[in-house]
Amino acid sequence: MGYGTLSHMLLLRETLVMQGDTLEIELHDDLRYRLSWRGITYDGKRKYDFRSVEQLRYDFERDVQKA
Image 1 (tube, rainbow, N blue to C red):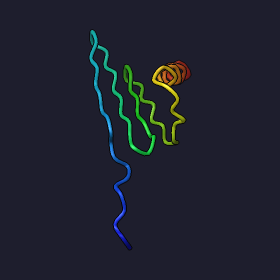
Image 2: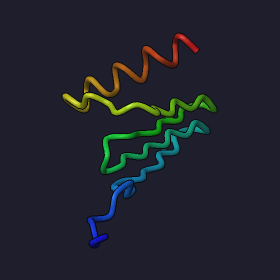
Image 3: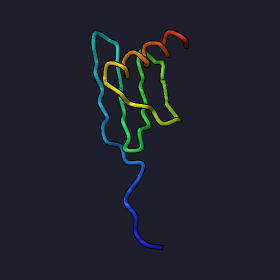
């Protein structure tokens, strides 16, 4: 077997703290993501069809309301 490229790398991890609320965002190179807001974590085990930051935010807010 030859050497391949690294996969499943964490590209971005951000934490935003606002008046006691915390938003955490993780984006991986294979299009996985993890969002956490007010103790609710949305962990996309599937690949996300990324179109825009606005769509990502909308999808996350919709999933939080469902939870």
